[in-house]
Amino acid sequence: MSQEWLFWMFGVAAFLVGLSKGGLPAIGMLAVPVTSLAMSPVKAATMLLPIYVLSDVVAVWLYRKDFSAPNLRVLIPAGILGVLIGWLLASVVSDRAVTFLIGGLGLAFCLNAWLRRGALTEPAVPSALRGWFWGSLAGFTSFISHAGAPPFQMYVLPQKLPKAVFAGTATIVFAVINVAKILPYQLLRPYSTQVMWEAAGLVPFALVGTVVGAFLTRRLSDRWFFLFVQVSLFLVSVKLIASAIAP
Image 1 (tube, rainbow, N blue to C red):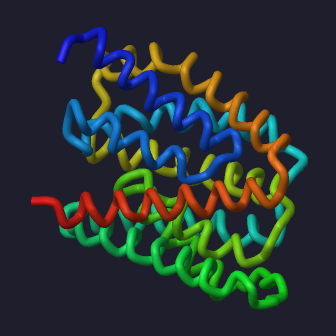
Image 2: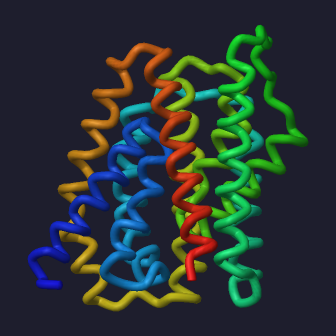
């Protein structure tokens, strides 16, 4: 594959990361599979972390007034705990097993939500116990393969938050998780000067994606926004399962 095609492939991946940071969760999870077409998933995940972090700066500013404080109080410390667990288990945990588990959970969540679409259900309330479980799982899977969106969505979607609050809460939670990943990533997968320069060249793609994602989020109706989130979660979950069972 030529260097020019490789650059544009990573540009698409960075744009997808930006879209997710702009308020369209799960889209960013497609970035690692896209770049994995040209390199190992581990190297792809390592190179994309700076893009996630820089996109977070813009996204947090865009959603600085839209978030659920009760959820942040639980999900942020839980997410950091999940990163710590991922770091400690990095040498023994099976990437395939984690990938399959998260894909299966996401698939089950979507099917349950769609099959019960006609049922009248009250919005769930934030729960410390559930929040610590799903939040730590989000931090753990985010550390392993930038796949923290499904656990987060499975906990927060049933709360039926306003779309801006949902997007802002996701943005802030994963901004903190991504910062918490910097030192462990550097210890396990040290960054070279070349990787940092390559990542810097992708920043414009990510920033444009972040602004576009926020624009679309604020203009989509609630119905279409959450349908988009659920369909994205379903498709990503199918992709995760396929990746886990592929030879």
